[in-house]
Length: 69
Image 1 (cartoon, rainbow, N blue to C red):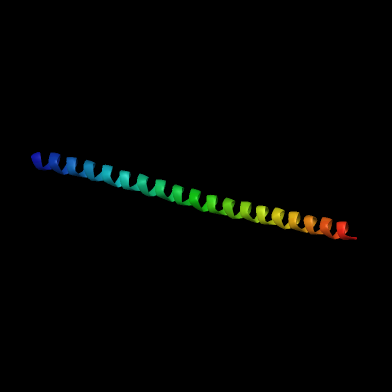
Image 2 (image 1 turned 45 degrees about the horizontal axis):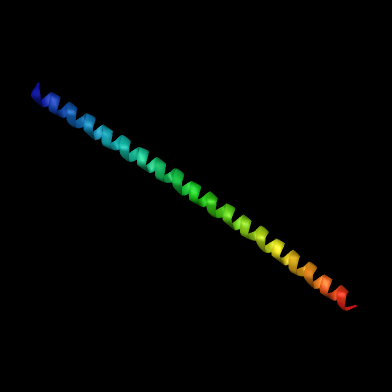
């Protein structure tokens, strides 16, 4: 009977470890996905800023050209 109780306790404790490891792995996967999405958002934002800066430079150049005429 003692052996059964010890085996049961070991099995329960091992199960807790597996659950904890699974939870940690799931959490890490979620964080990795969040980081990837944040990088994509950052890239899109950079592209929009670059486009806006290009437009501003073009308008400035057009204004300079018009002023010189």
